[in-house]
Length: 142
Image (cartoon, rainbow, N blue to C red; front, side, top):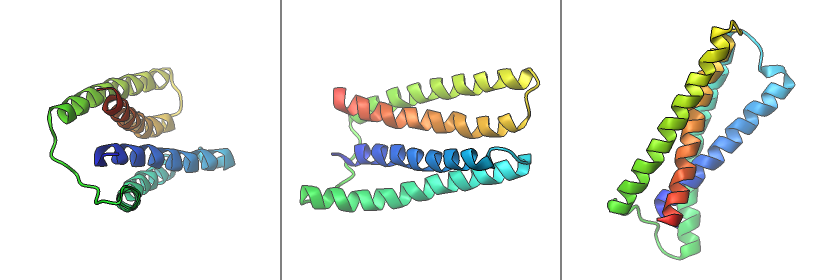
């Protein structure tokens, strides 16, 4: 496993953990509230994702190094890495744009403005998830 693949797995696991926490919170009545309260909760979620990625990268590097019995090195990017990144970012950008555009429809129909706060969080999270999943796919198939 390369360091780039490991980071993609860490990102996917981070999304699952944080979205699981938010889903649990929503099921217990946390999905409603003032716009400021919802925004604060989602800012904590963003911070949790960043922290999870940092800690996950460190722990993942240690575990992969132990499993491979050699240091996991982040090698310089080659043509394949650039192609994988370009395709993954393309997929991510398309999905993020579509989700953000679709979020405008309920807002235009007069749904509560709190939806905009969730859309600002969900669109890039889905895009980032697609980016990480695409990287894993392209590294395995290219």
